[in-house]
Length: 185
Image (cartoon, rainbow, N blue to C red; front, side, top):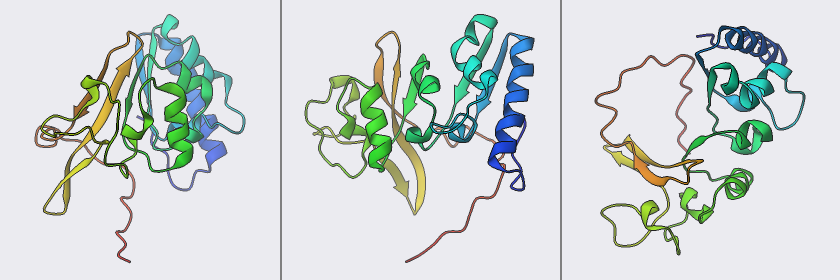
């Protein structure tokens, strides 16, 4: 794992990530996970050839990849279009929702947590335990997020709503980087 230090600028990080990706692709049979992918493969600006290559021809070389971003509208189009499977959560930005609309074949409002009712939602995407189809929601107990809903889809046409509630108890991981400060207004 290579984690970005806060003193490393975005351009320098993009170049370093490209070098790591290039080395990983040479190994074959490797999984590369890119967090904050919109910095490594931005919609605007130069994307290094090794980064685009991972998204396009990497699988043929035995290099698989997972691209993680909270800003879908800022991620490079080639990276987004080449994904064989997607796990999309909630987005409040109209730009991100527009990108979701461009890559999905169901009502995009399901990804907007501000929308309470989503008409014409396919049965597989309807929430369990609720009478009406709602958008994706976070589940909060005692002020803590204990789960959130996502839409999983892949290039075979499979689509389903997934809920992470209950997974936190069985998962353990180290958080790298600063969490940030909570603000009350």
